[in-house]
Image 1 (cartoon, rainbow, N blue to C red):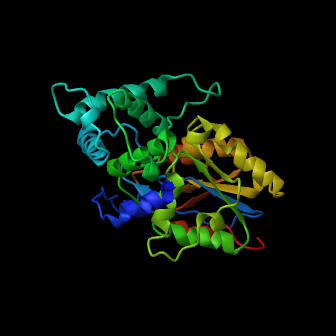
Image 2: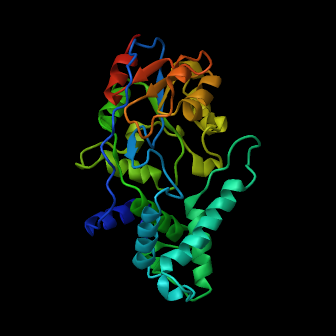
Image 3: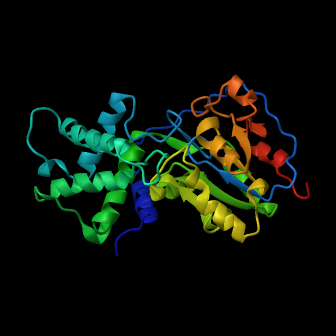
Length: 320
């Protein structure tokens, strides 16, 4: 039976490969505002830049540093023995792959959105599926008993590539913050940009010691909405639809939910328009996207500001 994405991740870890390392967060100049919010019954979180510290602050498809792209593509080509099926052209194999990869990503960035007015998202696994299908014309193959069919294999290649592209680690005190929300009986969800491997990546980061609860114990069923599965990315308000519908079934109204994220316009503004409360996470200068003027703007102003995820304990309390 083919490995699941989780099993594949464990297998990669057992091999002790070298991966890029995310830098420690750089605290920005920010003053927390931690007055308890009354009537909160649920918390939703962004992933990259909130619960996960990631180099450059957000998940990238085209990294701004050319060397990072070169290393990630070169590692991916060699990991899956792709060079045997690549056209023999002048230059290194990664350069030829980059030309194709870049064109596919840019075409998807310019494609019409499934929801008018909302920016389209790139499904990284689908990009790699196209590249794999092209290699297949040159007799490229893989071990389906290990990696699965082309859909499963594409997900694993995308995961390997992104893992080689950007370093990721848990944000300071992320696990404690999530545990607190669950322990006080609040519902909990994830909403934001993410890919097919994001939940595995989050689980891996939060459970480094092997003693943490599974994500299914931290987040309510149906309350996870990631951009790759919705076809749109931040600041698309429709990213919240699935989560809000599920919360409604749980008897939780938008005004009883606080969304925690570092990007004011991209992540918090859409939540605010939907009637949710908002908490700006200002714990890492790389992911923070909010100016002093925006924080004071009545149309954008977050309800609360955190500089440490543990501060959710002061904002969301039992019986407040």
